[in-house]
Length: 451
Image 1 (cartoon, rainbow, N blue to C red):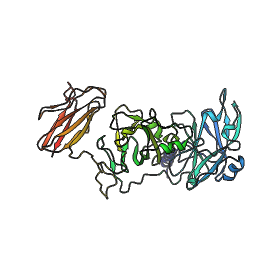
Image 2 (image 1 turned 180 degrees about the vertical axis):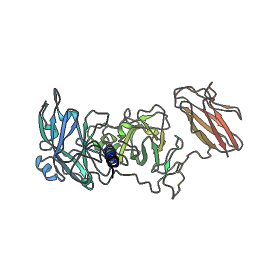
Image 3 (image 1 turned 90 degrees about the vertical axis):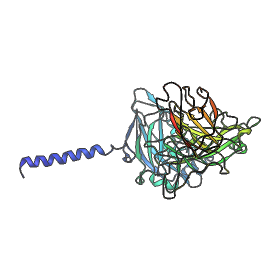
Image 4 (image 1 turned 180 degrees about the horizontal axis):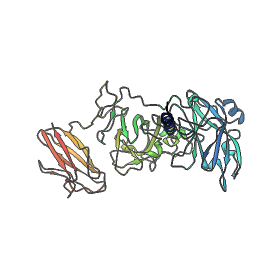
């Protein structure tokens, strides 16, 4: 082989090596490439090294303090001994500046706070203030599922960090070798459309942002449950009661989610006054979303949401969920009727996901305006029948609802206002639109199917 040919071959090999290096994640920067035990990782002004791991530390925790409780059934205490070195210019306290979490096959993180082991020997809270060059060894402990023990790995990030500056560490097991969980999509129906009058039934799945959400069950009167949860919980006000819903949720995004910070759970009943879990809270609620940490792609969680509501609203209450920081009124509506009433979505046993519309021909119908659009854009009602359509302006601009056939027109609605119109039309297809100047031209139209 000529010298030129050798150089070409060597150049190609070098290029392949460089490409492979670029594709492979640097150690510690990704869940798929954690730092090994004894390998330091830098997080802000700190360097952290996992020194040793005790997968089952139940006896250590029991011996440390007589008031430490044993782990709950199916769980065990996991201890990781770490060295923390401070390299900043001033001083720092690891317990107030670093967050230590572990995650396994389930895709739901454990924290040293919400999944505490109790009093831990040489624990994180015992770590002193560190000055430049100061180092401390301490024990981190989590109450974790025994089924996940071999897949757990640790990630560390600044406590008040919003940029996901995580460093990943192996804890000596498979380290997530089995990959991230995926939602079981067998024979499930995902409802893509809902409204207040036709909410998604209990047990069915709706989409809210990066989450698949369903109501698992409801407790219309949870007064006794809330009272038993914490001795300082106040009873509901006169004429009110605590209403609790059990939620099941799967994260479908590509990074991580936190339900308590990503989604807003509210409810409304016949009195037409919204209830929020903040302004109408029940106090300390068992298994609250507030106790959840990071949820990774495919991770599934269950938790309770609770509102203090007027007893008069209990039988008519429906829940709506929307992204917490959304300004587009992207609401998904869920039934809170455990008797199973409400429109069941169509099901196809062969389909793994069915896009279902909950707008069948009916005596009553509902439509909302959002910015320069109607939701839904297509409505089906009964022919030759008085149908009451409720129009709600969920945006900030003024809108109305007009059907030229039959001279049907709502009042001009400000944001938050509602109006009703009665429609009685023969079978056919009609157009409805907003008559505010420029809105129809901008595409604020829809189709009314009468059958």
